[in-house]
Length: 302
Image 1 (cartoon, rainbow, N blue to C red):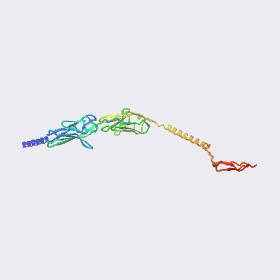
Image 2 (cartoon, rainbow, N blue to C red; image 1 turned 60 degrees about the vertical axis):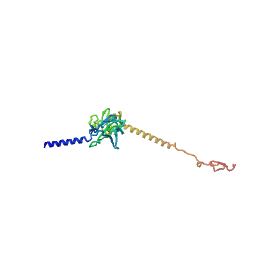
Image 3 (cartoon, rainbow, N blue to C red; image 1 turned 135 degrees about the vertical axis):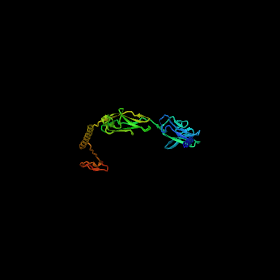
Image 4 (spheres, helix red, strand yellow; image 1 turned 180 degrees about the vertical axis):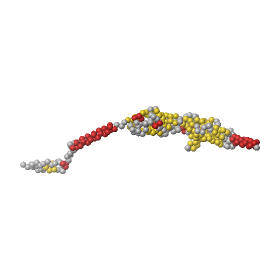
């Protein structure tokens, strides 16, 4: 009985080994590799078992637009041309990775002489990009007790940047209640969007501020910018308004007095207002069609 079981076991093992030898099997050392931009990266595609002596090896890049060849007919092509090579038997080495190389890559091996003639593996590559100097906006001066917003934007980094704000080179915590120095401050800080909003600024908030954008590839900072906090001079504003009102009243009074004294009245003489001179003794005056043109009608009477 024992001999029969042993014979069956040996038969199963030999059958398994036979089919394993006749099947193409691939594996990889890393299914999710990453690298920094402009560095090299290896996408491993290892042939664990194969019988065919000259298998066909292909690499494809898979994006939203669909798959495209990067290695076909024993040549590097497409996006990786002049930037990659094949390490025997099927590993793809990218010598100068760029941000556009972030994608899924599929290694396909076809072995015509094997019982199982095809196998593939998919590798998800991420090329990390260091953030560039962020664009920071800090108001130069803010009235005491008013709100203020500081913004920080950076769009080149990958993965997406996270943001930190610093006051006089000391990091501002997201929650002011976690720090004794910022405990009395009233603000909200969003590390995802890079906005720092003061609900009501205090005199203590006046200082130099700068922002840091960071991700797994590194970080960059914008130059410090100073924010001042000033008091609103209510008394000065009221005095200014009062002076303007007084000046307007004086101008109005002056114009009224000028009208009363006739400085703005004007009279014009016209032909209709002309008065005929009184007649002298013995002389008659006759008015012609042209107004103002007179001649004698009769002789003098003695």
